[in-house]
Picture 1 (cartoon, one colour):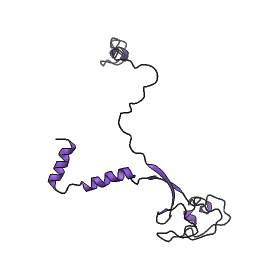
Picture 2 (picture 1 turned 90 degrees about the horizontal axis):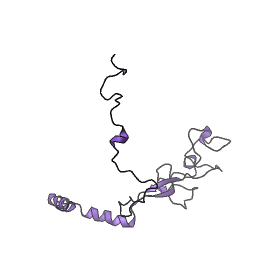
Picture 3 (picture 1 turned 90 degrees about the vertical axis):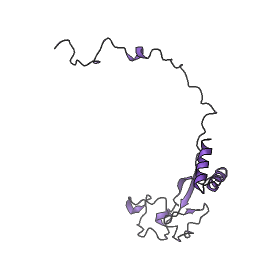
Picture 4 (picture 1 turned 60 degrees about the horizontal axis):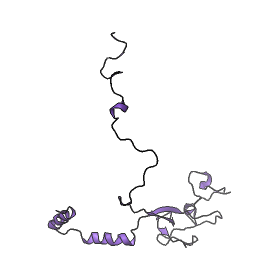
Amino acid sequence: MDGDRKYTQRGYMDTNREGPRERFGDRPKTPPGPRPPLDITGPRLPRLLQTVTASRCYNCATMLAADTDFTGLCPKCHAPLHCCKQCAHFESSTRFQCLKPIPVRIAVKDKVNECGLFAPRVTVARDAAPTAAHAGESRAALDATPRTPNDARNAFDRLFKK
């Protein structure tokens, strides 16, 4: 072999080539320290959704009011609410299908029972309902739907200010 290099391709272990520091030496350096704060006049952040804590019926997923009496029935599907499937401790993969230590298995999980460890299942969900400020905008957008092809063209032209 000629030379002490194993590979002879151009660029492999070249001693006369520039390193990355020399190639980009003319680039301005960023000042040390913390970054300046973002400009307030920048892009608007999206409207963040609020979270809602509520119970839902295990059978029909209807959102139950905060003052719901869980000894009764679901207002929509009339399923019993004081049952294992509505309980926060219900887990189908555990012994007796309950996270709490119960002495006897309750056979029918969707019927009313007298369990003293019952706690209603509460979920945290995002409130996707439009607020009053955005509801007017969406209604105006629905009223402005094009009726003819010319209306669609005019709306497109107005969008791009042609």
